[in-house]
Length: 341
Image (cartoon, rainbow, N blue to C red; front, side):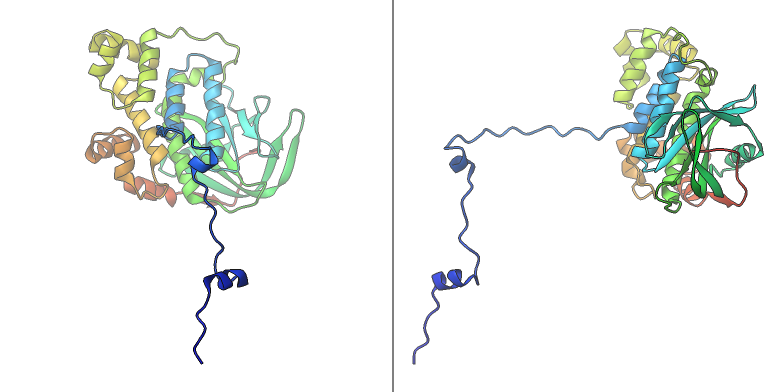
């Protein structure tokens, strides 16, 4: 008996094959009115940290510096992924740590200018360790708190990380972070990146330390238009040379250098290198896997140039420094102070 040839239609009816496809050509959907193709220009990824550092350098008032501190807290949470973060600044005259911006028990940024605590041995230890290369420390079994306008609410107990913000002339403040909401363990790669942020932030804020504890209603300092134009140009393109910048603002390179140094207390070259290092941080693998690509993309002309600038700024080769940061947090049994996030 001759075998019966399978009928494709029968197979389709029995559901053993895929059903016939329905055409969805644009021309059919739109009755022949096919749209013309226009390629979209892809936006560059946001330059979060380089923008922050540019703002810190160009800040001309206590209010502007305060906005930088708020952005720093929010970037640590939204970009680095910290669950909760807060920045306290040192008032050396009164031996106090002054609140700026923090995180509440809902994970939202809140104003903490109404709180302070006495500077103590734990805070001094955090700064001392930072000078020795341990830029962040972790304390165990601390009270985890949320600050409200009229009360301090204790959320539980757990670890608190303290990252020193140091400037060339000494301590500026401390970044605190914890995971009071999720109770997740310490993320060392995250802490290492935060230490880099605080290192760069400390150098930028060192020239503004007189404004850190000043009233936010204080009148802004006059800002020379040359400085405004140059900081804006370098924020957009930190590869610009001093010659290119002087042509842009129509003054000699010498005059530009003098005005910029007088207004910002740093040189154009140092400011540009800070922005390049911040861009490097924007694009670098937290574990140091793409140093060359990140350095070139940040605006350095070569890896050798990047290596030289990085080593001069941080005192170690990039890969060595990042590796040391990743393993550099110390865990202590005592608590740093009566605080925190």
